[in-house]
Image 1 (tube, rainbow, N blue to C red):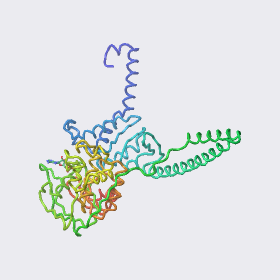
Image 2 (spheres, protein in one colour; image 1 turned 90 degrees about the vertical axis):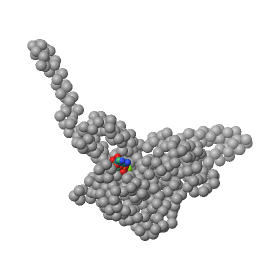
Image 3 (tube, rainbow, N blue to C red; image 1 turned 60 degrees about the vertical axis):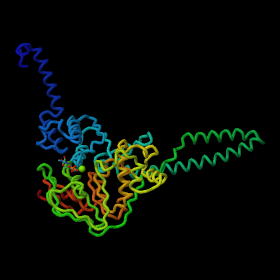
Length: 439
Ligand SMILES: Nc1ncnc2c1ncn2[C@@H]1O[C@H](COP(=O)(O)OP(=O)(O)O)[C@@H](O)[C@H]1O
Ligand SMILES: [Mg+2]
């Protein structure tokens, strides 16, 4: 437009103006001048404040890079948003934000997720892929969970009816065949009956699998003394950056406490200092009488990577080979997996080995660092049931809100400034109260 040649030519000017108009429309449709706000809102929602804006993407951690990638996709606002486990690297605040974002997204969202709370709050329809078939459910996770059981039950009833009818008709058919030897007209009847049987067989439902193989977890252990853990004045900083300020904390036998905090707030470090794997800057940790601590490490680094599951298990507890194989198959290890070096196993398999160790060491004080991260929903449910039955003491780091609400009755939160604060309730209680205190 600034070109004098264009201004001099009315036709050319009209054409350029029209094009400018179209470009302007497109700019506004894509967010226009509000785009910058949108970018800020998305970044903020995913936990990147203004301090992050000038950080080189190259210097971010693996988890952070994934988040920036997620932000990039969300900002584009496509008509169809496809998300493959986007919540794996999100902390609690960011998950809650994503849930809201999906709920109010103007387009269509198709999301793969293991997060039951997200699936409960943000979605209206669930597709389940199982044995190569897709079934759809017109509701959220809780609806899916019940409806699935109802459908299986119904399918089972129908299956039984059909199988009974097939058996009855086969009896009739055999009888007609016998009579046909004496009287020809029964041969036609026998043939008709056979056709009926084949028709029913063709449309018959498959035998539904009511109970799928699930991992078997039993955490029985002898009880410990009443006072399990006594922490006073514990603190830790890295290179001058405070992770947690001095705090006191006591756990009694049978208590269940969840540790929460943003990514990088120091949850893993806190567990490791409690276990004396890492030194504290100040304070003391006392473990009570007859306490057997069992540690589930987030990065699974406590597993002997060059060993095989078979050797690993037998080093923890003397068992003969058939016993070990039967124990491991209870955790859904296949015959081949049992002899594969641990470093070649999947995250889920490594998780199950860590759970195996907790079971075999008869630990009565479990310190768990994000134990549900690598497990599928069915396995998480088994672990939850085992923890609910477990009579010992549980201290667990988790971002899985559903898990926390089921398992813990107290929350130990590492807050933004490194203050460690106790909330006397489950996760939902903590989430409601978390901003009630000045930080
Ligand atoms: N050996 C170390 N030296 C310096 N910083 C570390 C070291 N180990 C961890 N950190 C930093 O401490 C912070 C807390 O880490 P971590 O305890 O793993 O957090 P969380 O488990 O809450 O995500 C992170 O910013 C991490 O980069
Ligand atoms: Mg951690």
